[in-house]
Length: 319
Image (cartoon, rainbow, N blue to C red):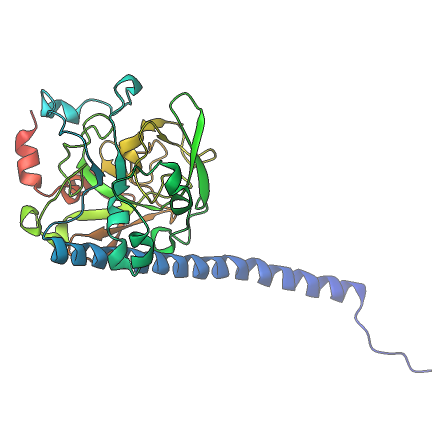
């Protein structure tokens, strides 16, 4: 009687072990390829935003404001130089009004092939008004990074932790500049965007290819509405974010971020910082519409110079 050829137990275990090793080697490569594709898609979306900002400027002769506010201009800070040294901690007793609050991203919608959505928005009504509930919670694909695990509808909290409005997140935020008090002085930054700002291309003295317009602030780090700023709402460190601290900031930070003492993607980052879901690289769109990733190890002085529209003037103002 002839015996059938078959694997021995040892041979079978060896095959299983080899397959396991191959799978273990393959999974990181697949994950890296997927992340590379997501990062490229993120760059494409930022490139769309950069083009939209250029088209907005062509149509209106200025770039959009960080967000719109119908009240009077706040007086400038007594000593602007102190902005370099004061921590931008919120003073909720002095919570600035923000209505109607629609953001630079909302104002760019007609140039992002989102004209129907834009036409459905009444810019004279506040973002938080009940009539805007459905609009505020709509997903906006171009405003979301594919690598951002925090995107989706979330609940905005007041400073005392009371749940208020629902909104859909964005992974991108406008550049307020370097240092400055977004919380309490949203009208006075040295970047391209502030409350009610209307800068022209000619105002960007450092050059359009050397000035950041918009950068990443992933919702996995801090959740903010794409629609804009909600008066008396807060932006907070997302629970489980890869940082050491949990911080609460006032409403103006929903639409804008700045560069200051923290490096990009620092574990000490706070909601007014830029922060990416891509790990070692953070994508930015520059005023000329180009998109470039910056390393998290970029020199802080270099990062500050890219964040302002007139770095030489900002340096001269420092004490």
